[in-house]
Image (cartoon, rainbow, N blue to C red; front, side, top):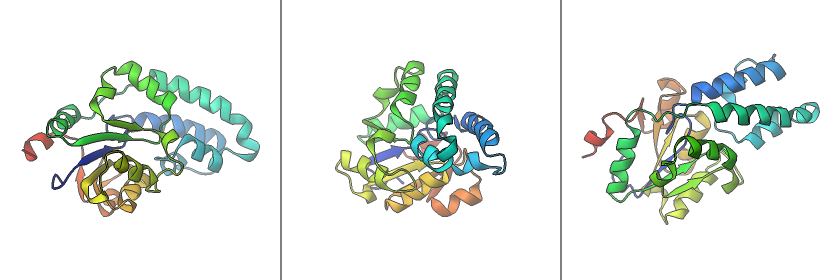
Length: 211
């Protein structure tokens, strides 16, 4: 995966941070409250922006509930644990030492990122660019977000490697024409493997393998 790698593009939840189980709990509660007849909906919406989730699942009669859900989400994110996946800090440190550009490409919004920065003041220094939902008009599985990230570094798709865990995110990386590393933090191997070139459970050993 290191061949011709000019830029490493990382999703956030389930890729940099081990947060997906926490979001599954939050959205599971909301989905059971408002869509009790659609079990598993919290898994279907992974990788989508909050606007997309609201437009698709909380519009019409439920639109008036959006401010309350947003308030619950903001409070939840402020108290969440943002633990780096094992080996991530070592791996991204090596990439940067070798001159590989690094970016976060996330469907999270800027208010959410403020919660991240509060917990991890060093976070912004790990990346050359951080793209949030406000930076692209079409979210995953559309490739727009990853193509815009590549353009930040004047990199062609075959010079970029995408690190993703959600089905929508994996599809976005594929649609962008980039090589894709699938993290097995959210979905099982059988779901991730067809949409990725390499599958890993975390970053342990990545620095040694790529020396």
